[in-house]
Image 1 (cartoon, rainbow, N blue to C red):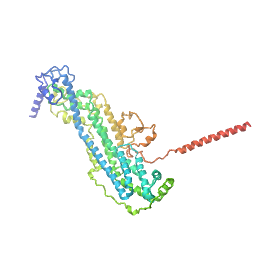
Image 2: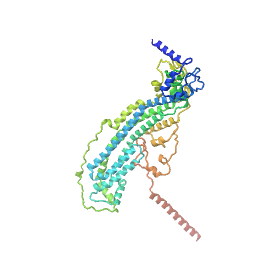
Image 3: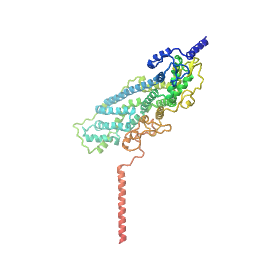
Image 4: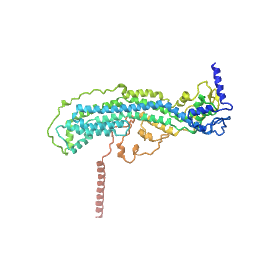
Length: 562
């Protein structure tokens, strides 16, 4: 019975497309229902299709040239809408995680700053209020760096401890001295990087911040992922693709066949041809997902952002404690180096009892476990993993889920209604399209090549590889390249290229953390440059030697004359 029914359907569909049509009413109805164009372009009855360019037919047709143009626009719109529908879940996943990460990150930064201020209030009350501005500036810089700004980590950490030293010295190292003059305070401030009163804490804290910067790389990578989807969602289809889509989706309407769908093989050839360049993203997108997973696996311990930020107050406490422990030595150094500065004598001496500053352990921050960055990251990557083959199977999914007919159902093969498609079905990717019988693919899409170039380099960054000339995501986003690694675009000091303005280059630090660039270190200069005084001394010595030789030669010449 089912076989008989299929035969009847097949004959009806075939019959509707054979011979001369008496009316185009069904075509009119669908045309208006889908809002393809104005009614004025519709013919009142079947006509000759001699002026048609794609939907040609030996028999009469219900299409005009204007209708054909409107159908082509509709076919392109249908495919782009379908493409955006399929990518919407992936795009929503990335966007939601980015928003959640930023929100949690901001909360974490506020908690870390507040926790640090509380520690100062509890253990070092006298400097808590004066140091609040420096604490706020420190965490502002930390937040900007972790979100991708090119700040010098060493510089802003040392700047914080520069401001902290005069406060600690006046209240806890040498508390018997009253207010200081601006000159003396500035002198004490300048000694932080010379006498290192806080031990190795500033360097260690800077290293931890730089290392935990991989979280910023994760965020930047996700922004690039969203950019990839936005680009492919609005990809401009080639002329050959647009004509093939018109032929597949709307040319049967011209023959009065409005309810049939293209054969599966026919749909695959058309869509694999249209999305050939997009399929080239597949390998790099898979690696992108794997690289994110690998980065996430390394984000623990010193690279765990939460651990570093929420441990900042402990490091600050240790730093001040180290200075107090070495108070006599530091006091002697300060008095020696800043002895010429004028200090106001104290009106009264008030030495604080050490027992009044008992370090009181603070309660741990109340954070729900499901709000932590690590839990959010794991849940996100688990879902993202299901989209790792998104670009490789996109054309097939679009045909399977909506564009093509089911198995065993009569279908459109581009010319007639048939039982099955008999032409060769090609694979995915640009190279496979050389034998595509439905769509002529001329080559790779330059826009897709730029996207692939960005994915290649962000993958290398996420994997911890060093990339010459491309030290940050900003440079990747503004440059384009070919398959051999040559990059276009001007190179200036802002890009980190060698050239003029060396001091400006030294001021900036690549956004890559030690995890991302293995050769990135803090404060380790094995071969320090010669000082100006040393250079001047050497040149003066050479000039002096030359002058002596001139005098010797003159004397020798005078002796010979005698």
